[in-house]
Each structure stands twice: as structure tokens, then as C-alpha cells.
Length: 232
Image (tube, rainbow, N blue to C red):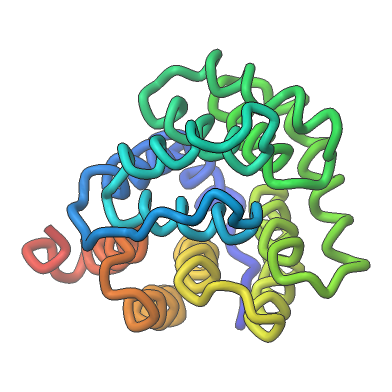
């Protein structure tokens, strides 16, 4: 795969990053899906995070919020979910307040990545950069699936597509959720003008979870130029 493209075209995508982020969140939260079984009270952070992510991706934001608020106030995974929901509502300050204390304690964790992406949205790219680098570096010495997915997303945000591609591949091999990995991987391919690979990734995500709304949003973006009615 060839990732090098003209800088002028890359700038076009940089300028629309904020809009695309918001659009994907809106599609995710607005799409109806099947019921998601609430986790048991003793569920681990990883189990809760996966269940909440599925609820959001299936269009059940209120269910994800209910599950998150039922967790202990100090639960990092619950805070990340609540911050994502606040950000989707445009409440960036509230999301920032939820993420910053956790990111300070866990500079390579999920909250740190979400905070860095939020900083970019609100125009604090300089503050986002060192956080993204810290998350990226976590992946270079880890075989943990969740860590590798975070590192891949950080590499994408840092415009390091080759490393992002490798991290996504390693995350898949390590057992990361296929719908999550393939959707994020598809966005990377799409941004680098590799529509055929983007199409494959989004289709793979939908095969893994037929109600994963972000994958449908990505698929629509692939098709919007060649087949607008189908994309719609």
C-alpha cells in the first residue's frame, strides 16, 4: 500500500477533521440497534468498556450512560464513556473535566487518548501532541490488544500511517474487537485515499457486528462520490 500523497490533499482532510468527528458521533448515537445486555455489577473495566462501546455503536447512548453512572465514581472506564457522551452533546468542558484527572494518572490510557482528541477539537493541538506520543509509545512495547488499538489511533492522529497500519494489524492478531479495529482501520485507509481497502475494512466491521453504526458511516463516505443515493 502506498500512503504518500500530496500535502495539499492531506491539508484538505485536516481541515475537516472536527466535522467528521462530530458526524460520526451523531450517526453512532442516532442509529437504532438491538438491546445490549447490561453488565453485572462485578464486571471488569474491560468488559464494561466493551459493552458500553457496543451500546453506543448500536445507537443506545442512554443505556451506555446508565451503565456508566452505575459504576463507581472513580472508575476510569466509566468516566471515559461519560466524557464521550458529553463531547457528542457539544459539552467539551464537561468532557475535559472528566478526562483530565484520569489522563494525568494514566498517560498512556484510554482517557489520555480521548483527551488528546478532544484537545484537537477545541483548538489545543499543542497540548494534544505529547499525549498522543505517550499513547503511541505504549504500543511499541506491548502485546495487549487494547493498548495496540490505542497506539494505532494515536499514530493515525499523529499522521504516522505506516505505524498505525502495523498497530491495527497487531491488535487484530492479539484479539481486539474486530468491529472496533476494522472501523478505525477503514478511516485510516479512507483518509489516505485507499478506498478499496477502506471498503474492505468497513465491510469486515459490519460482518463482525451488523449493527455497528460507525462502520456504516464510513461505508457511506466511501460511496458518497460514486453512488450518492446508496451512500445516503
